[in-house]
Length: 242
Ligand code: TMP
Ligand code: ASP
Image 1 (cartoon, rainbow, N blue to C red):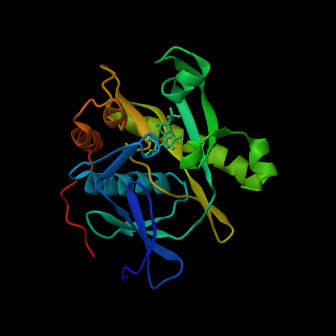
Image 2: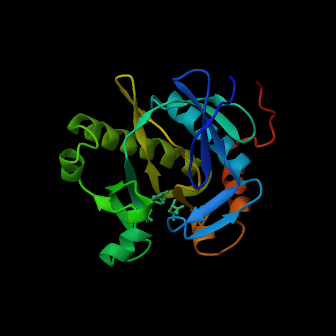
């Protein structure tokens, strides 16, 4: 599969066309951003670690019956994916209160959320990804009611699958963000699942193993991502077969 023209460049990934209109190549760069691009840096190896980690998670989700856009690893920093018609909405599930939830609602940081809670955000950096509800999604036609139902149930399903996966490695999945898109008549999980888009804590010490290390200037960002991969048994050195 040949890499064609760049279609889109985001804050941490670039997406390229291929000769097949239904397939794209997603490149994970070392660029790291937080606060909607206000804080930016380059972290060596992050693109490679996230690309391989994302491939591992997407494969795992597929084995558990979650349909995703992921096709295959292409290189250390690239993956081949299906081209989706993206829904401009971010789906967030939270198992523990932290981050923007605490700022918005004044609740205690670290509180267990039983049952887990769910939020929609509009994908729009200039507006700082405002929180939206299902009525906004319907009124502006961002997704159909059936798609909303499916995004919610698939995000909760991913939560169950990944909570168990991380728990086996001594980690707590605190919260995460997913994005979905249409492919033919199907709704597929798109974008990525990496420590850039979730919060993971060591279960015993609550040490942060995710992008909060970058947001809060704690250092050891890529080292923490590598530790997460190691604890799940992801081989970051295996050559990618082409
Ligand atoms: P928040 O506490 O900042 O709202 O974030 C909740 C979770 O969703 C956290 O794991 C980070 C992730 N997230 C993103 O990755 N990108 C986003 O644009 C947003 C709003 C959240
Ligand atoms: N992903 C967003 C950004 O890069 C928000 C964040 O992670 O803080 O700016």
